[in-house]
Image (cartoon, rainbow, N blue to C red; front, side, top):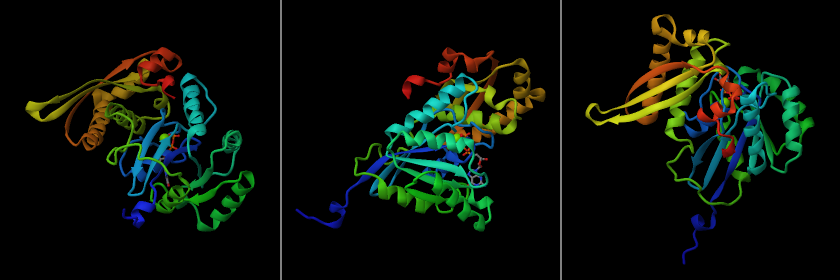
Length: 307
Ligand SMILES: Nc1nc2c(ncn2[C@@H]2O[C@H](COP(=O)(O)OP(=O)(O)OP(=O)(O)O)[C@@H](O)[C@H]2O)c(=O)[nH]1
Ligand SMILES: [Mg+2]
């Protein structure tokens, strides 16, 4: 039997949870690593609601990243749910990436998260993101201040947006992963079905185009997805759920202009995702107080049992 280098080098794999306060850039990092948009991003806090796995397969390793909702103090049932999702992933992973924003100092939010780490054995890397936004001289003091707070296995400054140092972080991650199997086929980049990503892309456009009061009041449901062979396109029908009539008005916009713009932008992303022409039909519906009603949350894909 041949015993060449390739045979002696064992395959490594593992689960890596990305944890941090809202808006620090967790989803941006995930998309950058995967090289494809699987998690929506926005400048509004609490963009990510569900746990999203992104899979990176290399010749000698597979890394399964888990993007989580930003950790914060819950104000309503949806917030509770999001916190639970973030915390439950901590225990069972091989590595935690604790992401912070280089522009913001250490605060109560960070302290709250570090407290959670003390109860678990999982190694933690501190990832200082958005270094493109600070002067290089300011980096060392940030690193020093975090060193005192917790014994991180590594401290890695990056820019998820511009890609600085991301490769280095990946090789450090590979370093500490255990030997393990290839859990997913090499061409699979996420565990989430296309249907979920489609509704998320629509939600993202609504987030981007509307102001503060809207973002957390919406959910998107996919009503129909059908391949129309004769026209060689995919017909998608989806409903945007809001909490109040006034919000419905905002989402629809003047003579339907807002909804049209949301649809136009979402369609471009969905076409990229599916690699096909898409006809997107959007509807808007008011469902009062949906965020506090657990049964409705389930209808909209927030399934606690999965976590
Ligand atoms: N300048 C800069 N902006 C970044 C970087 N990474 C992310 N951002 C921006 O920060 C904002 C938040 O990014 P997200 O990836 O949605 O943040 P998140 O941590 O997933 O947020 P939640 O899902 O709400 O917890 C977006 O506007 C991003 O474009 C970075 O490295 N540099
Ligand atoms: Mg996110």
